[in-house]
Image 1 (cartoon, rainbow, N blue to C red):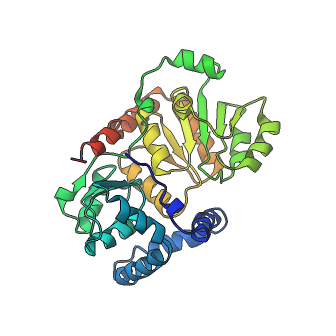
Image 2: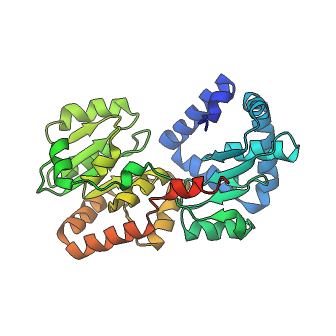
Image 3: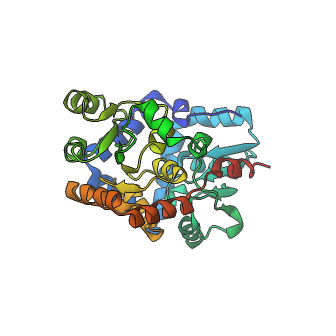
Length: 330
């Protein structure tokens, strides 16, 4: 098996622009990203959107196309929508004969994930499946596998030992704050409110400036991390997680049975994720720092509410998603 970042097989300018434009939009102009996300999902605009995507990709993915033609893979599993359009185009032209499996990594689905060359869509839940059916995807091309997570998230571990290893007090309600890849949102303000009543861990992600701000100010009252490779342990040692509602973070939390509180969602994919999860009584959506504190206190003080939210989380979990997806290869 080969793991390949498609952007590494595009021209350097495109790769830089692709990542930096997205980062700029979601951090500085989130409203514009939300508008574009909705606009590109309008049914009447799909012919124009598809034409623009084909031209856009054809101009920038020549190295990726050459790579696919040379390698002639038997199966491609993609967790991003760009290869869907590129591989579909190659299949139409007869340049590759490959089984294309598309793993949708959100709980709702945007039309940009659709492609006539996809042989199987893997989706998170019943709502995602029904949405694909509404988009006229045949039922036999949809597998409700869940979003794949590392198997270590489903391994059982002794919580007391984990807390001791991490340096947490075993008798305090522990909150994990995951700020997303770019560490955006009113993190400092939220943390200021939480440190008095809760034991808190914060993951700053790629935002080095955020880490450098939080660590000197809160380092003695909370655990402040930049990049971590033991997210599974931090989740298992926590009682609740305050997080941006990204598809993978949600799926990892579901597997560990961690009640979720959502904040500062990106308009579009993340707000849609919240809408779907609320149908399953998973997570709590908040619109202010006060809401976050209130919801955490409710979880801390009500055994019944906490248990209900934990059970709802575990019901939606798909710990064997990766294994099920691999089972579709043959």
